[in-house]
Image 1: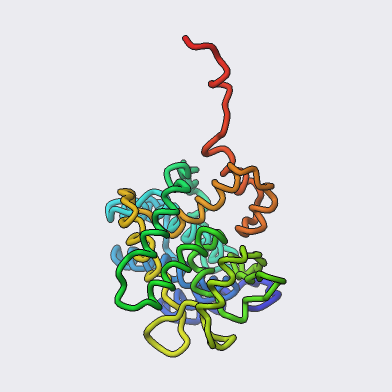
Image 2: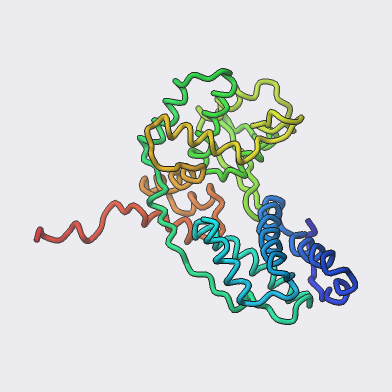
Length: 309
């Protein structure tokens, strides 16, 4: 990533390229200063959008507001959820804004598109302490072909909940990110925007991780892929681990990795852990994001203080 970049008009430079090459180069320039994890997602969103445009004989240079609306409808007809569609549209708006700033397009059609604020319904994605305990205890008792895989799955469950990690942060952990602190230790996590933070772990979890490491080298990933030398476990392979644990616990909802992170924040808020500490641990850029967890399962309300009617 380039530390300091000034975006200059590249319209003339791109104009000398063939239309397809110019469009590819535009996307490369748009992505170059974004974190690697963001680049992978945004490249997929851009590919979907340019593929949609190609299907109607168009390119980014000729995009209209109508194309944006039709792309949104196309995503809806594919069965994508509203939050996912909003993510796609936000990425496309960013791409078109960049294209406008660089002079590649003369009018920014994305500026006319306003994305609705969605009700995320966080309270529906929070597990109880009993749910968490059942997921872990029943995974401990489950029959695995390989003991090492069972230990790995348990540590994944515990880190996602206890440390409140994002799945991308979990799979990116290396042993060099672990630092001893007296009887326990801390992990250094690289989150959104390549911002790092330090999370002090409880002694029991630290010891379980150290036992799991054995003689693993510092540069090795904590959770390795079975395919390839020193490659991390793919984030798509983590979700089935969580879903299997949820099934064991008798949960009928489609529990995902992020539910454990939501539960970490909510349970801490209910236990009156200081909000700035929750924010620091979870890596929220804005404290209002953290404060939102305080309100999704209130411990009291004025409704409880009225006489029975």
